[in-house]
Amino acid sequence: MEKKKALIVDDSSLARMMVRKFFTEGFKDWDLLEAKDALEALEKAEGLPLQLALVDFNMPGMNGIDLAEKLLEKQPGLSIHLVTANIQERMQLRAESIGIGFIKKPISQEKISDAMQRLSG
Amino acid sequence: MFRLSELEEDALKEFFNMGLGMAANSLSQMVNNEVLLTLPKLKVVTYEEATRMLVQHSQEEKLVAVRQNFRGELTGTALLIFPGSESLELVRTLLNDDIPLEVLTELEQETLLDVGNVILNAFLESFTQMMSVEFEFEAAEYLRGSSRFLLDISSHLAAQRHSLMATGGGEDEERAFVLMMDFKTSDEEQKQHTLSGFVVLLFSHQAMLILKRELEVILSNL
Image (cartoon, rainbow over all chains, first blue to last red; front, side, top):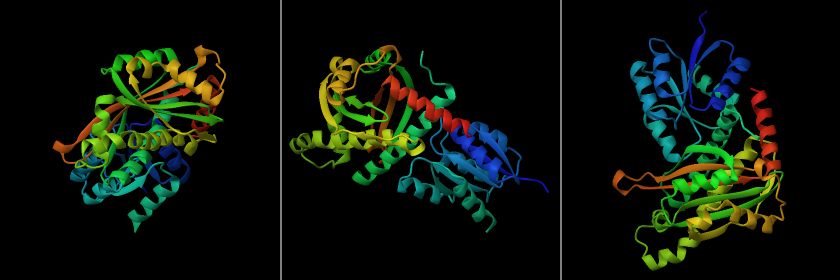
């Protein structure tokens, strides 16, 4: 069976390495794609059916909310979560308003697992 | 010479960003408005280079600073510095646009101390979130003065030594983190206030070694 595909977009190498570790250890039936900014994310996502996207908010160039909107245009229904250190209510509301999830940094295996469970539910 | 690798610096920036997220959240609750704090730049430099860099990036003669010493496994000084001419504007943004000027001036020092306290604590707490280090904070101080005085790292070190009774180490090995910070309240465009400042963390050689060791442990587990 083909592996499910997830995309992590974060300009921090540390954040990407943490997510990579969680996927390697806990989610072996997933392929993880990595991008350091929105532009690279859109290139990597081109033509691929993704199941999950984890997107940082504060990145050089396009921010995470704008990127999420672009990803949703290409693949409506894609499960996207904004993963951010900006934990203010207004940021959560912005995420909600475009129909994406919200994960507070630091990210953990448990938080990714929760996002995946909502996906299958 | 003491150096952090590119990856170690990247990791530190991410910790600081998480700290800033917490600070922005606390400030947004204080002002009932969204507060955006971003870190466009992080530099790890010697104290001497830090002074040079701050002078280079500061256009203004009058500055305002909040200074806070910390001690424990990590010992040093944290500073928040921003332009004096904009500090009242910041207080107005944080409190209420309708407050008369004389009341605002009275509240300026207290408000800026609160803001500095929230931001500096968040930065320092970001170390304790991911690392096994413990330290305590001294009370924050409000400073207002010329850029020549406030950007001169040695004057802060003298105050730090006085307060913490810290001894001077090998100056070559001591390092400062200079972080440029943008502070923005995201009202509608035309009412939006933007303010750029600096956060400077002065770490002793011993503190830098502990920090590097902790970063190596975190990164080796990934």
